[in-house]
Amino acid sequence: MILIYTHKVTPRLRYIFTHFFVRILQIPVKFTTVVDEFVAHNGLKMTYSITPLGKEFFVRSHDLLFEQGLDDVEITMSTWDDVPCFFSAGKTSTVPFDIFAASFYLISRYEEYVPFVQDQYERYPATESLAFKNDFLQKPLVDIWALKFLKSLQEKFPTYEYKTRTFEFISTIDVDNVFAYKEKGVLRNVGGLFRDVLTFRLDDVVERILVLLNFKKDPFDTFDQLLKLSKELKFKTIFFFLIGDYTTYDTNVSSSNSKYRSLIKSVSDFVDVGLHPSYFTMKNDQKLKREKKKLEGIVNKPILKSRQHYLRFKLPETYQNLIDLDIAEDYSMSYADQFGFRASTCTPFYFYDLDFEIQTPLKIYPTTVMDTTLNDYLKLVPVVAKSKINLLLNEVRQVNGCFVMLFHNESLSENKRWKGWNEVYVDIVSQFNKG
Image 1 (cartoon, rainbow, N blue to C red):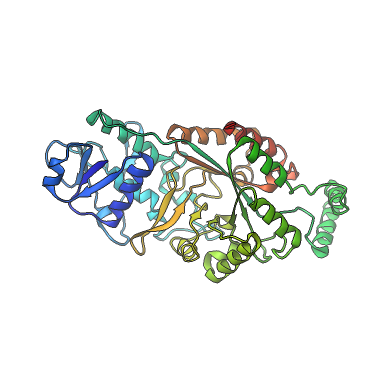
Image 2 (image 1 turned 120 degrees about the horizontal axis):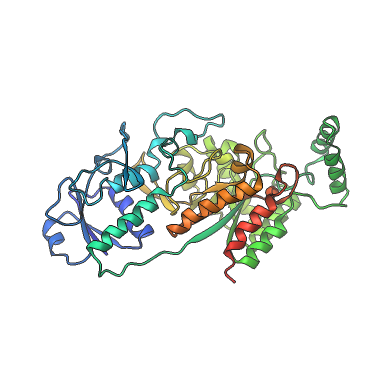
């Protein structure tokens, strides 16, 4: 246990110190504002305040953790050895910057609460972020800070028995379109057929006909392979099913379709299943509520996990709506157009609501990389995409964090733009055979 002396214990301070010490460094934490109690403590301890009490382990505090609401926070970047940092703390501080205020700024997504230029889907774009502008988006910076901090702590308190957490890998599958051709209805298939003929995509014409006549398996029906890999290689897999009504952005088959419902139920018997809230749920809590109720009706159990379609969410409203519906875990914390660490951490964390200044029960699992980011946005060929994923994996392994990867069922289809991507997925997940 580490004892923290500070002049004031605030919700922000308690939140980020708990995340930093308990979840990343595996060290229980206790706070005190009483000098005598701090001085009498013989174990692990540090001061977090404006001035040190003596020559103890000391981090000079920035004002951020003692404030409420939002302010125009000035950020000046510097480095800690070769690692980017900000909120410089001066020479008296054992660490040259306020590592806790900086971590809170990044993990709370403070910058997403202030006005920004939206992308075409009304999302917060990566290019607006501090991480992108300062070239640390591909680094789990908070976790890197924590391990560097730990080394300083170990030098000061070498006899304390420190624990190490274990690396975790989670494969998540978004089901935007369960089938390419089947169960789409006569009008959609006839329209697609004419479009393929008019654009001279004769291979697609032949494939569609063979699938509809049951002479060939639908290319997007890769669920048997996904489940088999998860079972044989023993890694965690979560499927997120889109069941919203048909719109320009939500083109799955109807959630009332018997084959689709049967598939969802079958998948839920083997792995965890979550909701993939449709495009317009970002601003419509009633639509979100209806979709959750539909999915729960299909699987006959509570739905506790969620990831927004198009990674489309707005802080804090979208997360507040999820909390109201008793969603326990969200996997939307990622950018669509860039891979990396949106919250600068690869450690799951609880959402801190800056509107109400409270830690909420919603646990955020940051997603590190998405297949469509690599393929559609960045136009990477499969072999280069695989190397990028492995680089990110290495970053997470070095800090024993949690690596969350996002693929789609259609990505394994070897169909059209996804040729070569089945091998990418298989090669990545094959690293995690715990047999």
